[in-house]
View (tube, one colour):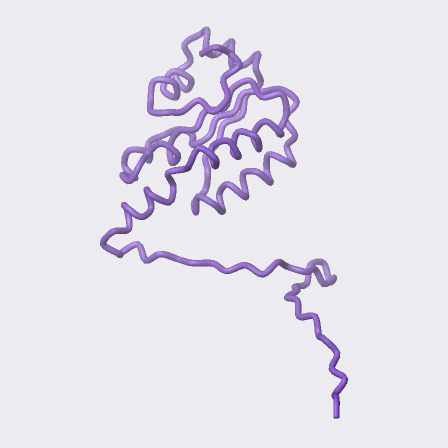
Length: 156
């Protein structure tokens, strides 16, 4: 005797504006900050591989006509939070015709990966060149502090 069973498709969903919207299945892990090797583990996780760096550069390049992208703060602080706490920005982008919607999506996904809010700066090329030429404090502190140029089409 054979039973005819229908396969049930199980999907998680939630209501958004009174409509059901499917949500992807995700597993989240959380690390106890009181764990004795918390800072070392955090620095290991945050230290990106060259493949991750290339992926980030590609994602930033897709935002518009990017001339300069600088990673600072949380991306260069290592295991000591005090070393990046005073940083003005974690990510600084100079470019024209930046797609704001893509930028918001990119920042949200980056914040999810890093596990904290990303402080970012965005400037058009003309404004950056003017402020750089005027030795603007914000630009000077950013370029003098620990940073990594992900994209540099301005020759800095």
